[in-house]
Length: 351
Image 1 (cartoon, rainbow, N blue to C red):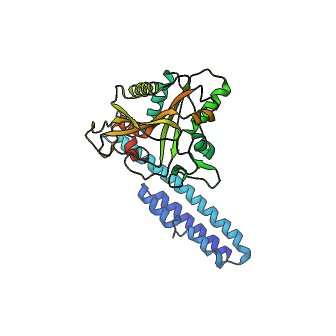
Image 2 (tube, rainbow, N blue to C red):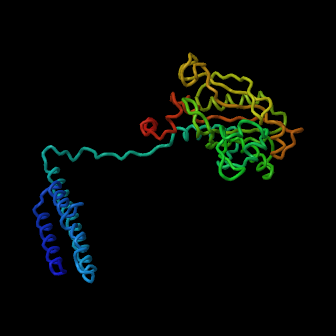
Image 3 (cartoon, rainbow, N blue to C red):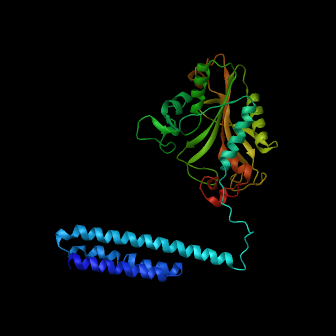
């Protein structure tokens, strides 16, 4: 084969393709023409494979001829497809069964994630109680995540079985929002704000957890801290009940039981009566009738000192609220994994 015969064959195939498109009256016929001439085994596109049979000095020009022909055929194909679509639409409109008054399809709009909704409601509730809303980094220094929170060097929480460590020594994915306690106290003092200090810090946290109906490896917490003079457990209990009342619109039955956390002394677990089973026992509450909602307690003197306050003069309370579990209680979701799975069937149930 030489350049002259190559040019002739290209022109012939291009003309055949154009004629076939003119005779194609619907989309199915147009797609058949596309497969014949421009598909993987199409005759027109296949001319590129014949370049190897040409003399070396003729390949560049022949390649240009073939590419230009393919581009013209693709453009003609697009025009034919557009004509067929317009014709099909016109035929549908002229059909006696076509009702122009029927509304067209409404595109589905997005909505806030249920955890985001609950977080904003709680933020509003605490803001109305005089709390500032703070933030902190998700990739945290070991110093803030453990040391300043009175966590001993040999504490199990520092191990990789609990905490996700980065490849940079001393950096981890924060395992709780509690580091914002120290960061917040230092910021409060730097700004010269009056006491008591009242602040919350919502955000994502990461733990090497065994995933089940009430646990996830990535979840959302809301840290809270109050520091001032004469702060007591009574203040803690009252504030938590008021916050939960604002979220649920009613008083939840809650209980305080002893709990150990290095950054509070004394420490407590605040449980809420399970709203799924009303205390009868289910998978979400592990058949106990109660849901662990937030660890809390009076801020440990070491943490108060680390934040720049004097633990001999100041006291405070702190708490960590699980937003995922709270969202499950609020909306009747039996498995916390559902709200973080990205399953649109779950998210669409929240208009």
